Image (tube, rainbow over all chains, first blue to last red; front, side):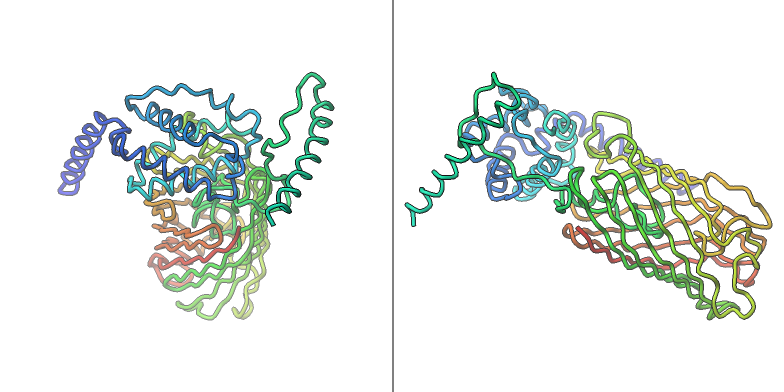
Length: 139
Length: 320
């Protein structure tokens, strides 16, 4: 009986916690514009040092790429932005991207999030929004 | 030096500009040739390991050497190779229960993230009870094929990654037990047998959870170490197995597993097994699985020892 009471209290707390979180956008959980900008800046740095994928960005306008990626993740996570770039399918159709490259960029994003101190469970929520893009990006 | 690099670059560029229009024309005469400086990805090679999966998403070698957790096989293909490469995962596992030690070692290979082949040896030593000193060996050959879905990419779908697998188990006999040399003498119908399983695995990224459910068609007594089928029940059963894991970081997860087992032998009140595990994958070459493991009652009536056989599970795994 006592255990049951504990479970009930725990469940109530969990519901309250998740209810409170539901009001906060993922964008806010990341830490808003400053944290996301810092993340994307770090990602570009990590990605350019990553031999698995950096060749693909040899001719990329990095400032533009940085801005577009920021807008895209900002919009996806409920932030006040509008992505104006091409669709993922359009922008990747000539790249012959592989799963290994897709995952390499995902790993670099995890590393960038870690570097700016975004909690892992929040990182995964962002990844959950990006992962379904795989069929449009990978041939 | 600089001139040399420039010269080399221009030679390469000239060659590329010669070849590329040809290739483009071969496919579609109307397509204009891309500029000579277009970035080309490195050539792909199925025989070159690419480490193309994210950490913790490759499937570890389970107790039977199959890509999974500790007790339960997952639908993930072992090794870190992507769909355009291959991966390998070898393991050494040491299980210490109250009256039984089980050492296992083996290797699994994942081909094109589609097919998994594995070979594992079991070596059981009885360390307590009246049967102390007895040894049992078993070999397990595994085949697994991924059928559908993707555990990670399919975040917008409820379909898990599904895989169908088989474990071919060959008994190596009972040693140092006097006249007792085969599980058949304990009531088993066969020394050797085959388990067939269907696994569904899904990573719920938003919750940082991995959930796996496996259905296993089997007659194996204590994983096959006590043979197949028995005097109490000789029909194959469809057993439920599950893993739930929570990813704490990109490299560390904890969780629990449950596995139903048949109960076919009169001398063995076989029960379900379960574990609580932690797995750490610091990189794509090493992972460590540590667990508290409870195998339930093992040979209770025969040994007159009635406690659960529980203890530690430690597995060190190497691969790419």
